[in-house]
Length: 140
Image 1 (cartoon, rainbow, N blue to C red):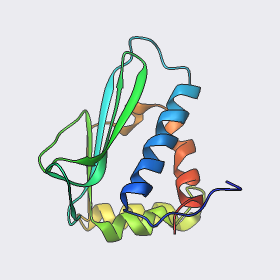
Image 2 (image 1 turned 90 degrees about the horizontal axis):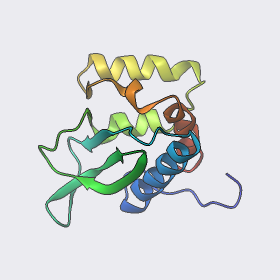
Image 3 (image 1 turned 180 degrees about the vertical axis):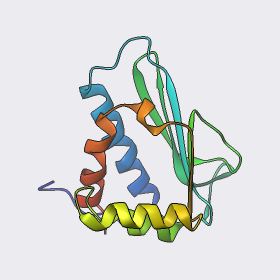
């Protein structure tokens, strides 16, 4: 993404960038007006944020309209909930999805319980795959 600064992974500015990219991609995908799904990703070893939140993001699509909040509550659940260590998130956010190492790193962090996924991520839609590489481009 030419003209965009890289952001330090895990900062509130970085999570804001992630939420913006997710929202933009979801809107471009032509969401059905009655589509609703929720997603939470939180760092299990993340720092505390104001308002009783920890590092992470809550992303919702309600009636075809995406929105997000930087930060997640410790016990917050969603249709799709991802809990990940900061180190595992960092390892994944530095590798493009097409990099042959990406699948191996993902499988290893899942096997080592450094990342847990509850729910069916595919419910968000194919647009989510387009976001990962854009996040990688903006992450330092």
